Length: 166
Image 1 (tube, rainbow, N blue to C red):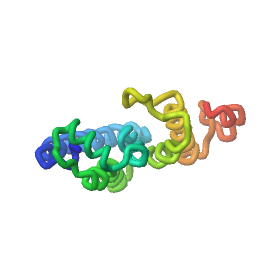
Image 2 (image 1 turned 180 degrees about the vertical axis):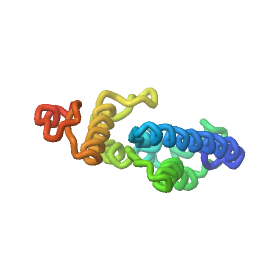
Image 3 (image 1 turned 45 degrees about the vertical axis):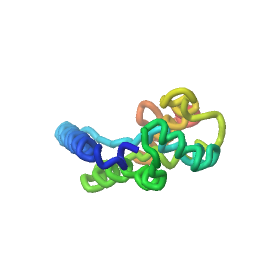
Image 4 (image 1 turned 90 degrees about the vertical axis):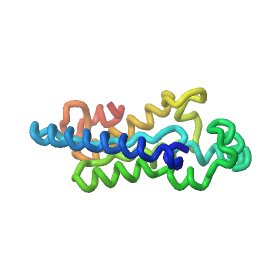
């Protein structure tokens, strides 16, 4: 709801201004030291799970819950849905404009969220063991694809490492 509430736009814009400036500084520092930089987007639990909540609760029940949570009498579910990818799109565009590799974990987490066990703990927003496994596997695969190398020592074709994913 925060991204859709006009009273928070200045705060949100200032936060993004600072974050993007800092990523630019980090990029410059890495380039000066010949260090490869990539930026990873880790979506929030609500971003990944909203489809499941709407499907299981129904839009009316979700609207009542959000109204109670945020004090809105009529929460804008469409606005919420429309803004769900705003952060992801902003960060991805920023990285693309500056030639910074962007690792988007949303697609893999969304896809994996349809099968048990849960990716996130029920009572908070942290990843479960399975969620960490999914993220770790996705990051490992991204690194293999980006470098053509497998394994911790960077040698191509390290069969033992490729099999374990470590």
